[in-house]
Image (cartoon, rainbow, N blue to C red; front, side, top):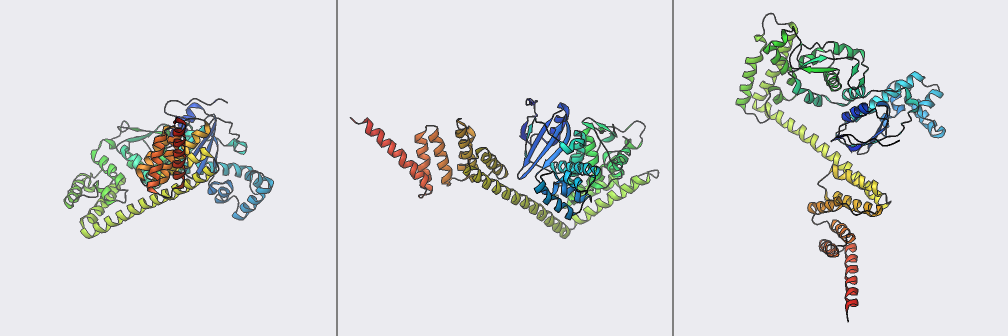
Length: 493
């Protein structure tokens, strides 16, 4: 099977930060691709299998996403039976689904339900990835027992958003649309294929009438918090709903500026950040806090609603203004505000340090893997491991030095010139860690391979200046001196 030519902007190999998963699913649907989409983020590896643009299976190296674990969570088998089945699997060499059916633990229908649940969990977890690499291989997916599993790209996006996006992310994505009016386009067919909705999701979408601003539509759809946000954003992403600038014809409610302001403010009042509720930066002065509160009181106080205002709108206005008053009261107290600011900074710092620590650990693991691959002469794998380490910790000179060296060695092994990237990484490493003798040795070796003996000698001398005990640099300097002396001898009369 010939490899499909990538269309503009959608390469078959790339980075999820440049080509998000949602776009890859859209591309697979549009081009009716058949094959395997391989994805990796640090130690996590997953594969989505496509047949004519439909998802027919998903693989993962995560233990909690194995079929046995999924069936346990679904209540189809117990943990003890799962363990026994795994033990038998090693001797019989059957997949766990077939084995569970043979042992009478599950029915065929249970297995199909479990396979779909497993695929949904794997897709949902993928949507939480903030970074990673992907590569599409146009191969026969051989779905075997997953042959009855067919998930459209539209349904996969809806699954991924509902399972993978947290509330903060969803609020950020929908915030620019707070003054729009959502309207249902379809509840079955999206622009990315057929979609199956649960009864709850169908009921929620049925409340969207095109006459209500987005914040109120979220509140009125009957789903709690994040579920409502995820359903509306997912439905918007795949074309089940659309956003309109004006309410549907005949809607008097949508033309009322006060009602729009109340519903728009309801959106920000869902935040736990008192500054965000008032729409102010964290450094706002006491006067700015007071003035903003007074402005909001004049513009959206519940008393401004007419006697004929609907009960649900009055209830919303009261809840919104109560939250605004709470934020104002706390931030107006110097002691309470200081305590809130300390907790806010502590939380931000803790989360940032936790993220940095996790990245550092993952980077070190990739670095150590790269060293092992180098010793085994698995050069492409070493390059990939060092590249991940650099992406995770770009300011660590040691990781860049070894990436440059691995790139150079991989090129030499392939019989090609050393790529410019190899020299660039080594020079960056030296800029980051000027006293790293190993980086100087690597750069000297690269220059020697390019025929630049003088440049190589300068690098080796610098390595010895940094570390007089650098045996590799000393040996290279002795070889250069010996060859130079032999050249002089041949030139003598």
